[in-house]
Amino acid sequence: MLELAAKMADEVGCAGVVVDAEAGAVDFYKKYGFMPFEVIEGQSEARPRPTTMWLSMRAIKAARGATH
Image (cartoon, rainbow, N blue to C red):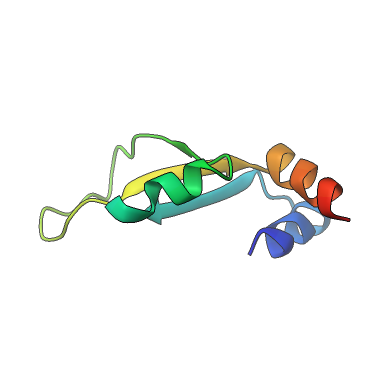
């Protein structure tokens, strides 16, 4: 997914990746640099709220450079 996002950033523009992390996955995403942020609209009281997290394209490209 991050490879595709990096390719899209080069071709059409992409600022980063947003995920909706379930409670048990937050630490997993944090170890890769994702940061939580507050969603203002679109929440549903009908299901548990995931933690919306963000990883910038700068961080994605830096990680790609470390592995290529």
